Length: 156
Length: 190
Image (cartoon, each protein chain N blue to C red):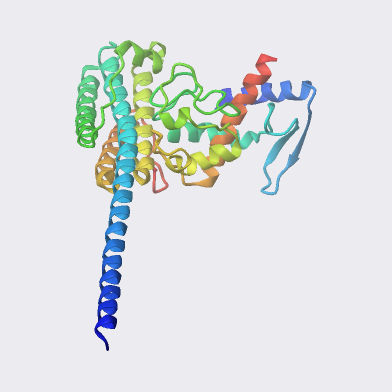
């Protein structure tokens, strides 16, 4: 957890030092958030909530870790940089026909719909796992979004 | 009523009855066709999900094999791991039979080396590392089975729940071995 906090801190420094405008504020639930003004949520860096990212990492291990890893294809494809990526495009992973034919970019909305009911989102997918709790979906998506932003910041 | 009008009336009655019969037959054919199509689609969906579960079990079997031969575990811990591996083999066999019954081809296992790479086995340095990995996998598997039940056809709900129970049992033993506290909140999985 400490390691993640350090990464988030480094990531925040990268964000602040980049051309985007960042400012801290407190949201309606009293949580401190880092707001990042960019070209919208379709292009990194993305706005992320530090507290949600920490919660999302823990939830990711418990809810997704049975089948997924960040950097290796296992039962499911690797997840690093999944946010903002086109569905069904991880190299060396054998997708179901449903995912290969899915013309979707993974965003807050599409990931949320996917996690609510993947077989309704892409009938014929091999992922049957549904994540019912909206707050858990939100935290996990925030974590994945953070990872995509961190990769983008590192690449620049 | 004249003879002609009687004939016409009979024809109308006959045609009406035939029409109703044809309509009912056509409807039955359409409904039957739709049911068959839906059943095939459901079977195909179940095969996909059950094959993902087979892949999960293949990985679990390999993980215990890697652990048992790592030289990092006490003999008593190896015995427990081999017993858990046997449970995963039992799960695999049930799932393979289910996929074959549905007319599908069961997912094949990868090489042990591929699983070792996927699970970063080279980073395991001692027994605690191995137990932590096993706990993460078992806990994840319990959650995975519970999360996929609503997507499976009802014929497979019970078996998926049984497997989730086994994975949760493994996770509890491993958490205890690692000295982790008992969770205070209910509904630990799913």
